[in-house]
Every structure is written in C-alpha cells, then in structure tokens.
Image (cartoon, rainbow, N blue to C red; front, side, top):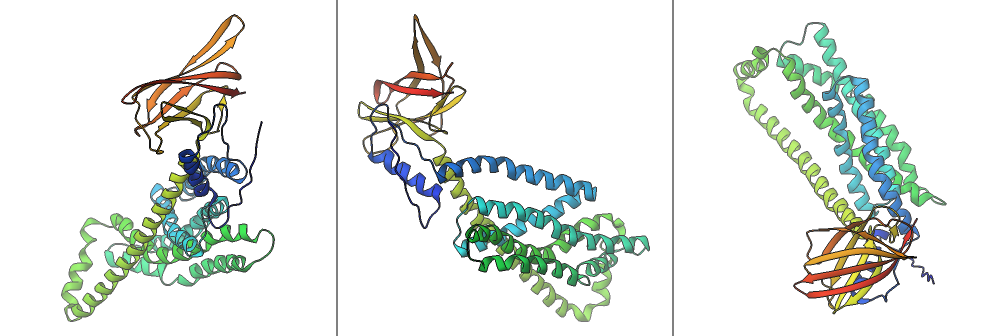
Amino acid sequence: MEVTSPVDVAGRDIGSYVAEAKQTINDRVSLPPGYHLEWAGQFEYLQRAASRLKLVVPFTLLIVFILLYLNTGSAVETMIILLAVPFSAVGAIWLLYLLGYNTSIAVWVGLIALLGVDAETGVFMLLYLNIAFDERRRRGAMRSWEDLKGAIIEGAVQRLRPKVMTVGVMFMGLLPIMWSHGTGADVMKRIAAPMIGGVVTSAILELLLYPVIYVFWRRLSLPKETRDQTAVSTAISAAPATTVAKKGNFLKTILVLLVLAAVAAGAFFGWNKFHQQAALSSMTTSQSFATQTVNGLIITLSTPGGQLRNADNEVTIEFRDAGGQLADVGTVKFDLDMNMPGMVMHSASAITPTGTPGQYRAKIKPDMAGDWTAKLSYQGPRGSGEANFSVTAKP
C-alpha cells in the first residue's frame, strides 16, 4: 500500500527543508519492517537537475575554454579572459544574497549564461589591449617599460567608452526583467539576477585589474635591460614630484586593497553559501528504504534513489541509539538472499567505513529484480545482533 502526503514549502529552499525533515523523522519515528519513506515531487526534480548540472557546468566551462583558445591561439590569453568568471561571481552571489534568492535551477541557468557574458566582456577588454600593444610593436615603439605603459593606457583608458557601452547595453537589457510581473516572472528574475550582478562587478574589476595583469604578462616580452630602465630615470629626473608620486601610489594601493577585500569577501560568502547548499544536497541524496530496531539500535538502510536496483547499488547503513545519535557497532556484514525453487540466490556486499562512526557504506548488486531478504549482522562495542529486511530490487 502506498500513502502520499503533500507538503507545501514556503519561504525556504526545498533541499534544506527535506534535509531537516528527514533528520527529524529519523530521530523521532521508527518505521516498522517493510515500510520506507520517499521524497518526491519538486524535490525529486531538484535532485535530477542537480545530478545533470554536475555534468553541464564543467562541460560548459570546457566548451568556453576550447572556443576561446581557438579564437586567441594562446593559453595565457584564454586564462586571462576566464578570470572574468570569478570577477562576475562576486557580484552574482552578492546580488542573490541581497535579494534573498535561494539557489535553484533557475539561478544555476543564470550563472551558466553568465559564463558566456563573461567571455564576451573579457575578450572585448583583451582585444583593445592587444590592438594597442601590437600597433606600438609594429611601429618599433615597444622597447621599454614606458612604451608598455603607454600602450596599456591607450587600450584601457582611451577606449573606455566602447567597453562601458557594451556592458551598459547588457545591463539595460536585463534590468527590466527584475520589474516584470505575471506568469514566469519569478523564474526569469532568478535567471537575470546573477547575470545583472555579475555584469556590474565583472566590468569594474576588468577595468581595474585586467590592465595590471596584462602589464605583468607583457612585461616579460620587453628586453631585459629596459624592463626597469624607466624606474631609474624617473627617480632621477622627477625628484621634485616625489611627494605627489607617493600620494598617488598610496591611493592606488588603497584602491587595490579595497578591490581585493571585496573579492575576498564575495569569495568567502560564496564558499559558505554554496558549500552549505552542497552539504545539504549530499544529506538529501540518500533516501531510506528499510528501517528496523534491534537491541535498542535503529538500523536504517538508504540509497540515492530510495530503493534497490537490479544493478550496482551503493547502500548507506546507519546505526542510531534511542537518542538519535550515531552508534559505532564495529564489524558489519550485509547480504541479500532470494529463495528460488530448489535453490537460494545469494549476493554478498563489500562494506567500507565512511569515516563517521555508526555509518557504513555497502556496495551490492542483486542478480535479478524481485523480492529479496536483506540480512545484516554486526559485532563490536555494542555487542552482536542480526536483522532481516524484506526489500525489493527494481529492474
């Protein structure tokens, strides 16, 4: 018999709610043999989407890297362009936090779309720097640090307007979505939000940090004897302006420190936010399919899909005491048996510890679909005990 109970989750993300609900049920409810709980509906869709995103996101990054490399022909330039990804992640995460949006499929779609926008703005910035650098080198005017600095100023400052216009068009195209209403507006807002926040911080950090990174890279192409020549001549010829130069350097240092602090704060928050979501996701990926109480210990069997399959299964075995705390039981053995006419089919498992006392992981493969008897035994600090579970292996 199957019994369903709808749950309406409001004001929080589904993953954390299910994780808390599962923990509460495991602590307070002991299911009789043959009963198990499954979490379906939107949570099931979220799990499926999360498993696909684990493939989509790295594959998207790989495609972006390959396309950029084919366009630039330089691994260094490709990596410089991809620096826009963490730059934009700072703004995306901060705006999601300020708007109170939880991580969802729509948010991840927006983050994936942001990768393409990052690549476009990064290519645009690097293009103007390369044009200025190559033009001076073609004219034979790239022989010293002063020449390199002039090229950077020409590429990053004098051509600031087209870069700002490009980012502004993206920003103005996405911003009206945040004031939209009606069907699908909530989903579109969560797609647009990370893109808006990412475009803003990516543009600012690219204008401030890209020229600096580009200078350090292109400086290696200058003759060794002229790399630091300007620094010496400036110290001799511009001695009266030492105080002004020091003030300018001090302000630049403060600006760089503020930018780095903002990046560090965004990265720290992002790590905590998504690390917490990943932890909650890992907690909810295993669903119980059998529970039994033996010698005062609650034994729970769970798998990622909430049931055994006629294939390789990874079963998590947990032992908890009456207070709901994990209990170390020592050595564990877990087997499956199926009674057939004139024979008994047997399937043994390989038990590996998870590093958490009271929690074990078993890899087992039923030879065929159908009803099996799961036999579990343990021996150790809690004495010895045995338990039999009636389980079904799905095809």
